[in-house]
Each structure stands twice: as structure tokens, then as C-alpha cells.
Length: 423
Image (cartoon, rainbow, N blue to C red; front, side, top):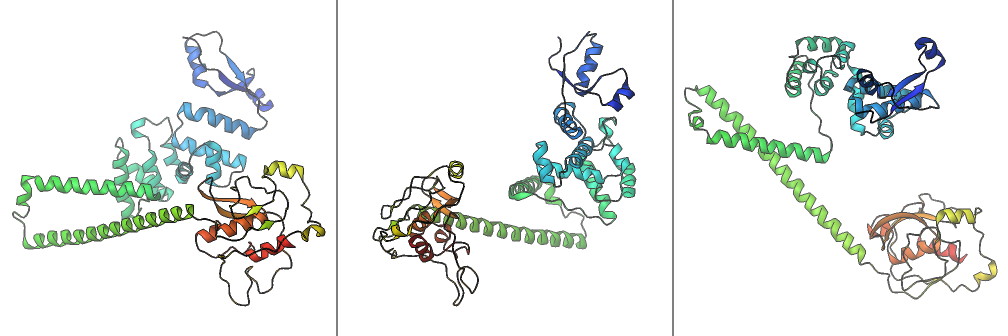
């Protein structure tokens, strides 16, 4: 016995103090515990007074505390999240879902209930007896009709039936008034489940029918027109099933080929090595930003300092890096081009930057690139220095090299990057 959970309350506003005098607090979560304490003749209960910075925070906290305990009806949840979205300024369903801890589909389905007429919404309230209460699935169908049609259909809809039967009845009624609601399948996984379930049902029904002794008498006392109609419809259905089966097989074959090709490319990417070329000495620039870059290739000797955390680097050097002194440039040997260079094609008279006139200068700081990381074993996106960019290009690990596609316009060519390093 005794109280197991604390009752959460808040202080009354000045207006509420006048309205509910002499009360001092309003229950946020635990009204049923409070009522049970009164029935159990408890002299006192343990409470927690919670203070809120604003009314919208109080509403959000009340919803999060009560949603999992009280068992709000679907229409109450819809009204509650619509009020929260207005208070907090949430504009998209995704934003609402992230803030209340639900999926975007869940939010979409409940907000659709607000399209119901006041009469239909009243049928979803908790005070309606459970057998007669309007359930979620039939209510979703009703939202496709006008308010007048909703009220008319509610009067005719069979009460006390399962949601599946009510949905089937509503589909037929809506079709008669020109509203053909096609059920939507969301996502490839849901589509696979639907097709598998349909195939199992067809196999089970047809198998049971073929085994039934009465099936041999299917054309007994049937007219010639009835026989022809059944044979033609069966032939038509069989043709549709054949087309369906052919498409499923074709898609399955394409999926297998794509999976095999993807696996082959991944294995090839893991085996890529730096092309043989004389060592290249790279001048020291600003410390590289990305800690995810693997150690340099054996054929490239880099003199850049060790990687450093981006936050530490920004704190240590808030100003942009200064260019190298001119006297150090004399010690840099000429850059030797690798024998194999993968470059994106471009049209004659047009630079790789998408314009007919070459930019005056290139960035000498970090570049954001996609490349294959040996340590991670996959493609990653990170910021790299020009020296690292040259090494990645020479080792063939840039994404556009791996996928044999055009080079992104914002990236320099190998020659331009080497020229920037040399100058």
C-alpha cells in the first residue's frame, strides 16, 4: 500500500488563484493517484512543485508526462500536439515528431484526424463506450469526405464491429459517392510485406479450393454464358499474375546484379594502391584539420605536421594561416607529376570551374572532399589541406576517382593544387 509515485503539480496563475480559491496548486501529472488517495482515505500525499519558464513548456511537460500513463484517445493526442505545435512554432511534421519523441508517420496520421467534423471527433472521445467509439483506421478514411458526408456515414456505419469490417464498409460507401481511396504502401519494406502476405493468401485460398470435393462440380447446372464468363475472368487474372511474376523476377535479378557490382567496387577500392612515382616533397602549410586521414602513401613523403582536433586548431589559430616565406620556396624541389592521373573531362575553352574565365586565385586553406578512408574502410567526407588533397589525388582515393565520375567544380585539378603548394 501507500503512495509509490510522486504527484507533479504547479503553482496557479493569478487568474487561476481567483477562479479556484483557496487552491494553490494545479495537478500536472497524477490526477488518478490523487483521486485514489482520496478514496483510500490517505491524510496526505507526496507532491513535487515544478516551476515552468513559460506556458508552452508547461503544456509540453504535461503531454510528455501524461501521454504514456493516462492513455489519451487518438483525437485528444491530435488536439494536444496541434496546440503544442502552435505554442512552440513547430512548422513541419518532422519537427513535431523530433520534439515529442514520435515518428513522422505517427504525427501525420494524428494530425489528419483534425479534418474530422465536430460530430466525428466527439465519437472518438473517451466518454464514448469502447464498442461504439470511432477507431483510428475508420476515422482516417472519413477524413476524405466532407463534414456533411462524415456525419451521414457515421449514422449508417455499423457499430460494435471490428475496425477491419468498418474500414471495408466505409471503402464501399465512399466509392459509391465517387471517393475511391487507394491504400498507400509506405516504403520498400512495407511493400515487400504486402506482396508476401498477398501471395500467401492467394496460395492458401486456391490450394484449399482445389482440394475441396465440391470444386469438381463448379460448372454443374451452369449456363454457357456463366461458364464463358468464369473462364475469361480466370484467364485475365492469370495473365495479370504472369506479368506480376515476370516483373518481380526482373527486379530481383537487377537487385542481385547491383549488389554484386557494388561489392566488386568496394573490393576494388580496398585494393587501390598509389601509382609508382618519384617521391614528392610537400611544403609545410597550416596543420591538417582532419584526424580521419590515414597515414601518407609509401611513395609520398609528407612534411606536414600531425593532425590536430578541429576545435583545438580553431582555438589555437583563430586567424587564417599566413603564406610561406618566399625564401623557403627555393628549397622546394620541382613537383613531379605521377604517371597516372584521373581527371574529370571538360569541354574545350571551358575551365573545370564551370566558366570560360579562370578564377584569379584559389583557396589555400582546407578543402571539403569525399574520399576513401583506409582505416574506416568506407567513403567519408572531411576537410583536408592542399597537401593531403594532393596525396589523395595521387593515390586515387577521391570519390570521383573511385566512381569514375566528373570532378566537382569547387575542387582544383592536381596541377592547380600542386601549383598552389609551390607558389
